Image 1: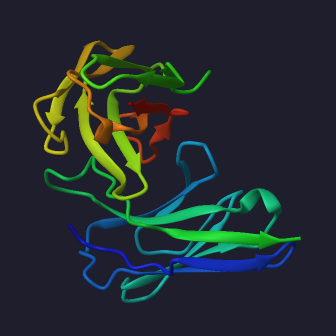
Image 2: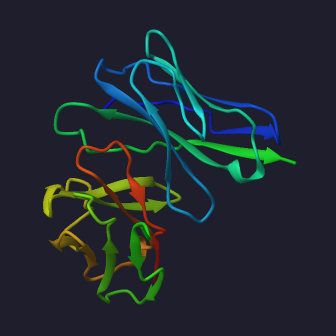
Length: 113
Length: 113
């Protein structure tokens, strides 16, 4: 399985943008890039996903490098409720692993008031 | 929809006892996943079902663990006999077969004494 590398932790101030990086240098051409987050004492929740183009939704934006070896999750205005562990995950489009999400250690985001 | 429902939310048992965790997926979702989360190993996929059929159980730690999905609206994860090292939070997730998003339940926090 292709691996992802994320910083262990990051800090942000409330109301400021946050850029969470993820490296996935061994990504294959058919791997989707998924982001999930896990708030304290809750199950993970979906944030966003993409393949090649940048993506926006109501929660966040996903910027994907042209060579797809890295991506950045962007929270435009961090709130205290965004404090969570953010996981960057590759999901295979084809093959036996298509249903699997392999969670790494993620980035623990702290948001300061 | 009520989301993925898991029961019990908390379970404390003694070593050697049988433990049964239950999950009700979101109606209409064809894929169901069982995960385990510990501080040491993070979030691990144990097994997943597609249309009630187990597809990949390679993450099940040993024969003491078994999972069933008798119908589209119910799944169980059983540990018999339980051991202290099984203490963890167990999450169930479901997904539409052609969907990208996994929806996680609130988890069952298991403590084996």
